[in-house]
Length: 395
Length: 165
Image 1 (spheres, helix red, strand yellow):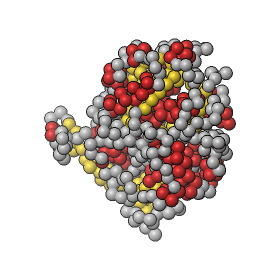
Image 2 (tube, chains in turn yellow, orange):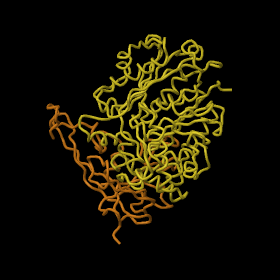
Image 3 (tube, rainbow over the protein chains, first blue to last red):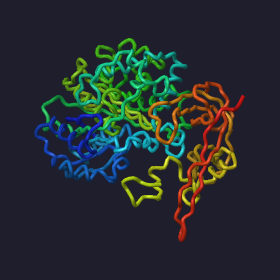
Image 4 (cartoon, each protein chain N blue to C red):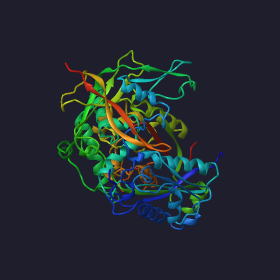
């Protein structure tokens, strides 16, 4: 419907980490933080719920989770009440769907809440279950369920084809942990030295422990509403969802779309579509939250998202361009590396940081940030999801 | 097979926690892939209408949606494009190191690359350019309830191994 815009109004997250809490406990904590960010919004004024989670239903016995979440949160949705399962991109997918629901006038106020409870009573299942998150019957038995092997291959290929250096990977972790130090809700609040990264336990060479995001329990929630409702609910500057894209061109690794593993044409495709949809270009992005599930991921992503030339992600990070003051400050709340990665909640966490950046209230504030971008890859790098936010509505 | 904490599951099979596919013909229409594996053949489906080769095998052609497909053989040998080893955080179903390779099946193969676990491969030996070959092995059987009885469905799966020099 022309003229109707969707805005992100507020958001909040619970403490992320290895939590002594169930998924439904964490969802309640995140929803409380979210509504605490929007004084005056009552649960019963929320007409839609999208719950993003992949492993609730596998690491707990609950299936058909959305009505359970709605009831525990005191919501009585009348426009939508559904679960979204896109693994690492579930939260961002929920936000894109909420945008469509709001702009089509089907919904007015939608809560998007993501959550994963990854730690099970016996720890073996934490790694083993990931076999179910990739193309199970083909890639599952080949061992890339837990993704470090696959991303170690990507790192080796990127190093071979573009001359990317081990230290440039390490610097991604050092910078993102530095950002995360000031984020009390993230999994870690510690600083890393390059020595910490290079001397850490090897997971899959060239990746060490600090090149890999941790396994994390957590939940995050945001409110997406029509522009009219957003004005009623908040005195803060409006933040519009300008557009986005989600590209999925393969599932089994054998159908990898690139020339080699350091070449991600599916992300280029998603980026092109998202920029066209939002009517902006890569150079207009003031702050980005990209999917740093591994240090190498961020390096490839800043290239394919167009923040630098293909192959120059390593030098881009090394020259400080992802830091505040650089051309595209990236993962300013700590990213996946420091905050952790409860899959369905990650895109929601990224959205909260962009919201705060664009409203001028982030902890690590980017000066005059007006356009923000979030990106997720999901599964064994089979799908790319982008959401673009702005202080002004789409032209 | 005791299921700790859930006594009534003792001796029962739960597919949700199975790492291997359900291969039996009672439960899928591409079971020929596994039957071919048993004979040492690495196969997939090709569309008789448009000629498109798809991997993994399908019941329809993803290009033209024809369901007239035939089985073709893929190369059983290839060369390592990149290999990696994982020592920490290896799932319970494997012994560390877990070794994987991105394998180039050659310019003439309709499927250019496959990712595979490497077996019969000593740690820190596999490198780019090494020749590798398909290897088929038994994996655990599971029960299938028939009308009056329960039968065990035998299974196989594949990986790759270095070709001895």
